[in-house]
Length: 169
Image (tube, rainbow, N blue to C red; front, side, top):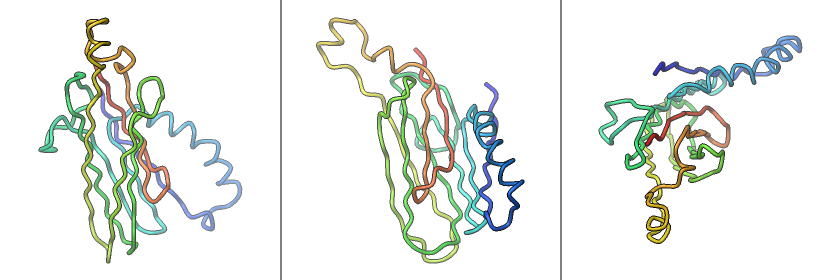
């Protein structure tokens, strides 16, 4: 599979003319659609001089990037930030199924005292059907769990990107 790096840059409104803002407002949904096909995401906030990236991995060594998994596999996400704004920060993740339904919400709070890097790790495993459903269907996992999943990332309440991965049979 082709893997693209996405990049979203948040600019200060005071630095731009109305004409530039209108162009950006028009292009943002298009840019978001283009970059939604990637397995990793990157975010830069020029006001606070913070940068965050996130990548999906196949195991908890966080060495092998992946975007395709079997239903039995664990999915691992590494969130790596360089933050220059001291204070309390929170990373929130929404794990969304192929049907667009929120399956899990992960949250991690941390404190930055000075400009520093911060790394957070997350993991996800599909839920199996109940024993009676497994007996009746002959399947351990619901058919709706196969397909393209989305992880939407937020830093301090601001949506900063998304990662996509696939669950295959």
